Image 1 (cartoon, rainbow, N blue to C red):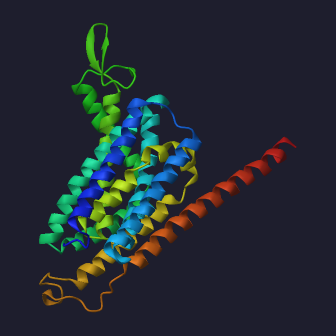
Image 2 (cartoon, rainbow, N blue to C red):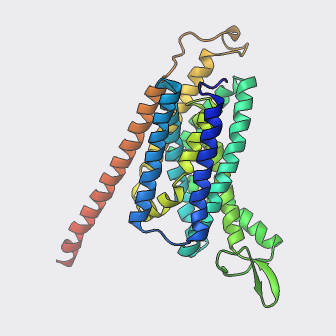
Image 3 (cartoon, rainbow, N blue to C red):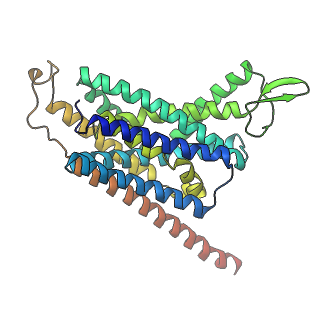
Length: 339
């Protein structure tokens, strides 16, 4: 589809944003360390503010609210999915016992893999939509199914770990892998033999996780906007500050027990919106004779933005309230038990 933004702006913006992300990742190589809560919080705040500033720039360049609202809705959707992605990263770091001082390097590789995979899927998705608009039916049904699986299908993170376990066992049979890490190196020497380190397994597991989340997230954002530039920049901003967010949230992720319900509701909402859009623009001959279905509503981007914000706010507040209630219950049980 034709973009509402001039080509010079899109090219300039992409170059600047990619350079910012690369500079952020290179900081890990120049100054590897575990960021403090204050440092991580400041960086996350910086990138969130940068996304809001970018939305303002989109408003100034496009001359209206439609483009920035599409970006904001897409960014918030991808950001919420990125937080869910962090759950898996935490599990992987614990599963492979990655030393904390090397976790930044692992996150850097994970972000690069995610960026490449999402870029490929965005190009493929845009091409498919351009030539086969009925794909919105498939996207919508897929998102509704994903939402159901997220909310009621058990622990998908455990399912992902089982699949990763098969991959890891296969790699161990194929490649000689040492028992311990050697810094952040992929190769090491043990008793004169050149071996891969467990870092290889970590990178493969992270890459597999990124692939799974890219498959879920790209149809979701195409339900917000079909503009490839907005889709890519929303994903880019969602990945910015992800490693700092990892250290900021850390153990707090366990407290967000209802987050997956909020994400599930967002995915289901976008899935239904995509089906409505597909019905409205219908070209399939066996549905309404190949004509659009007039009663199918078109849900505005502003309405989508409101639903996304409200869903994440309700899920977060409910999670924090439940965690506080558990702590108060534990504190009350403590004195009672000692008495």
